[in-house]
Image (cartoon, rainbow, N blue to C red; front, side):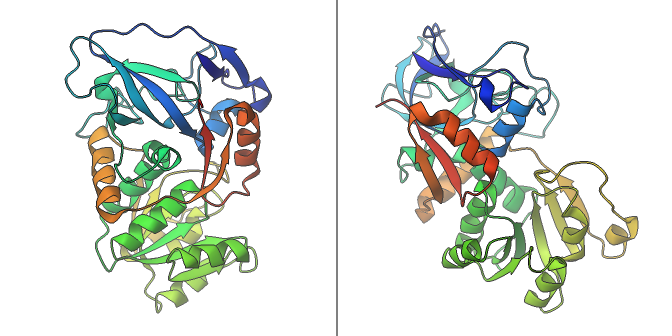
Length: 339
C-alpha cells in the first residue's frame, strides 16, 4: 500500500513516501480503506520531536481520518464491510475516567496512523462516521472535533446561554465555534486577522477581537460580556495567552487548556486570579471513544459541516505539513487518500 512515514524529531523534511505491505488481519481487526486524513498541530509537534513517548522507528503519521471497512476479522461484531468509520484518538480509552494506560497510545504518535491507503486495527479502536458528512468532513472529527466537544460540553460543562471565548481560528477553535452555536452559546473569538474574524462572524461568532491590534484583548472580551467575563475559555495558546484568558473569565468560570501553541513554559499565573473569582483551570487531552460517539450523534442531528480551509492531494502531503506549520489556515487542512 502507499503510505507516508516520519520519525519523531526528523522535521517536515523527514516525511517520506513509502510502499508498505498490508498488515495482517487478526480475528478482532478490521481493515479500513482510507479516503481522507486531516492535519493537526500535534502532527507538527511530532515532526519536531516535541511529542511524548514516541517510538524510535518511523511510523505512519496523523490521527484524524476517515475510511470504509474493506474486510473484517472472524470475530468482529461491531462492523461489516462497507461501513463508514473514523478512528478513536486514544484506541485504549473506550469510556470512563482518564488514566495513564488509556492515553498511552495514539494513532500517528505511538502506532501507525491515517496517512496511508489502509489502516488495520482492532474494531474497538473505531466509531461509526457521521452519516451527514463526506470524506474530508468526517476526517476532521477524531482529534479537532473531539477536543472541541470535550472542552465545551464535558470538561467545560457548557449549557445553552453560556458564554465562551475561543482563541484563534484553527481547526479546534472553528469546530468549537460551530458546536457552540448549534448548542445556543454566546461566542467571542480572537484572531490576528480582521479577514478571519469576519469569516468567523459569518459562521455565527457573536463578538470578535483582533489580538494584534488590541494586545490587551481581555478587556474587549469583558466589554463584549457587559463586564461579566465569559463562562468558559477554550485555551490553545499557552504561555502568551493563559493569564489573559483567566482575566477574561467571569466568577465561577472555567479555562479549559487544550494546547500550547505559543509555548508551555514561564506562564505567569497569580493564585489570586483563580481564588478571588472561584475560577477553574482544567487540562484535557482529546477524549474517549464514548465522547467521540456523542460528537458524531450531535453532528448528525444538527447536520454540521466543519470548516475546511484546503484539501491537498496525497502526493502533496509535505505541502500540507508546511501549510499547517505556517499557521495561515482558517479551519482544517485535509489530505485526500487514494483515488
